[in-house]
Amino acid sequence: MSDSKETKPVTELSHRTTGLALAAAPNGPRENGQVESDLTLEQGNPPVNLTPAEIFGRLAGIGILLLAVMGGFFYLGGWFSPHELTQVRFVDGFEKVNGLHPGFRRNHAKGLPVTGFFESNGKGTQISKAVVFLPGRVPVIGRFSLGTGDPDQADAPGVPRGLGIDYQMPDGEEWRTTMINLPVFLFKDPQAFYDNMIASAPDPVTHQPDPAKQAAFMASHPEAVHALEVFKSKEPSSGFDNTTFYGLTAFIFTNGEGNATPVRWTLVPEQLYVAASTAAPPAPGDKNYLFNGVTASILQHPLKWHLILTLGQPGDPTNNSTSEWPEGREQVDVGTLTLNTVEAEETSQTRVVNFDPLVLPAGISPSDDPLLSARSGVYSESFTRRAGEEPEPSAVKSADIRK
Image: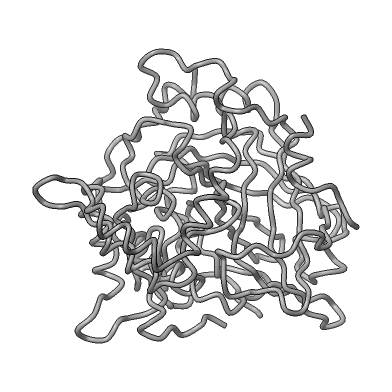
């Protein structure tokens, strides 16, 4: 989701990705307070080589929710054995399930580009030497999206929401992040992702997943059951503007003294949480009400989120995005993200940017989570495919944005 800057993606082009990615070196550097809980604020009223067993499989859906959730967060970290799946076949799976939509991401296809800035308060320098945490502002480009490979899917409150942000530092470094509105992920490794895809593939006759296969998968993957329970424990908010977004995966932050800390981050909105069921219903026939709503909000006033870093302690898992860290971990508010402009997909930088989670500045490095390299590869494969296609018109129309 970015622009001419993505001319550095010769590496990205070597793998094709969308929501998944191969274990190729992504473009960009890779070097390697206590605050209120994000719930309170919201209501405020070097790449890892993956083994074959770790390779990310594609989600064909345990129902619409699982399919959508996996959409933007599935990544391939390398190749399967010659008789197994490759990253190419992985992305092929997205196309088989969602259909082919030329020029669009194979996952999180429906989106709205935004721009703004991140203003650091300087507190992050205690945790990381990354330039982005020095006091001051850096520009950002981003993209709101829905977790689906169909760019024409109608907006709905239960479809997972995504937000990709590219922090652009004055020294040329970038920090690209991909987040969704789920506090935990459904799969702990690429193999589980793949197994779910197999279990959830629609029957060619009924066009529906086989309930027996789905039940068997869930019975053998209690972490997926737990993740769904967590997601259902709180009603989605009324729009993108008051959504909390979670980075899910742990990263390693290193400060100027060389001290390393495992970190997870969250973007917590200043806009007050409103449950989707209590908000005014969308206008009849408005398939893009979530995108139209956030567009209207930004045109009225800038939207703001606090970047909250949660600091892990020894023993906290860094290789499992399905597992929460214990309550009470120190949280640090390191600055404010402000989004103040919306753009059309056809002209935005984000059309040529992958929000690859392994594009990292000095001071932030990957953890041992097997999803990271996998994600990076699939994103690349998807990018390669759409870069060579004549794009179809976006469902979120330029005319609507201008209005």
